[in-house]
Amino acid sequence: MHEPNVDRTNVQKPIVIEVAGEPLGVVVPDAEVYRFLAVKLPAFAIDGQTFESVEAARIAASQVLRINDGDAP
Image (cartoon, rainbow, N blue to C red; front, side, top):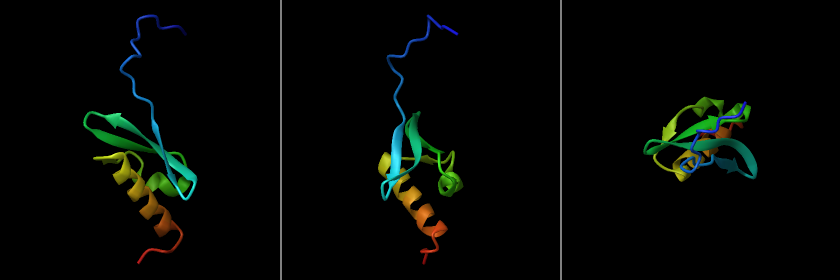
């Protein structure tokens, strides 16, 4: 379906969040935060959460991956 009136100039692309070379999800700008959308099962624990920065989302994904691997303290 063609939508001729859609303005895509202000649309920001998702940013891939990788941990140890494995893509776990993407973040998309949502107002003044970044919303995490999981693409791999271990990251679904934080799916939909918002973060103040891309780096904060990456850290959260890294922590979830460690927990799922049994390396949590």
